Amino acid sequence: MKIAIIGTGNVGSALATHWANKGHEIYLGVRNTAEFKGKNLLENPQTSVFEIAEAVSLSEVILLSTPATAAIEVVQSLGDTSGKVIIDAMNIVMGRGPQGYKNTADAILDHTSTRDVVKCFNTTGFNNMVNPVYHDIPVDVFVAGDSEKGKAVAMQLAKDAGFGACYDIGGNDKFELMEQFAWFWINLAMFRGQGREIAFKLMKRT
Image (cartoon, rainbow, N blue to C red; front, side, top):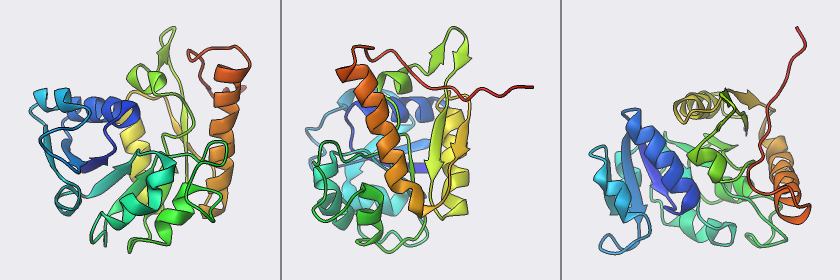
């Protein structure tokens, strides 16, 4: 796939690395191509850097992993997203997000043309994206959205990032639930003393 990564911090960098190693073409979308976080990602020949709108124009899939407070501004900088899938990996934490919204995915939908917007890769820490395997068992992630096309893309990319499974938890009405689940992980890891090296795995009784 041709994937634009908007937000080259910890989350974007971890996923870009996995996906490039799986042979996907990665276009880092940044404001300043001469100076940006994650320049080391360009060491992979599958990865290149462009200004944001150009990275989007070259891509089929867009990962948004910027701070939630910048969600609307970033989405407005994408240019034409018609026919493209947007994967939202952002979270509103402690009220810090786009004004008037309870989750970032709804803000994205209100400010761009594509309807293929899903929320994924937001429910765990970046350390679990760098290494999603615990004791030889890959942990799970989750996806929500009305777009079946978008969910299929996210599920494949979750597999390519090394996760065990990516479970579909429902449509756009579950965007807020996804962010609450993220807050559940943050609460355990940061405020209840469990530390970042925790993750979730769905277990089934056979």
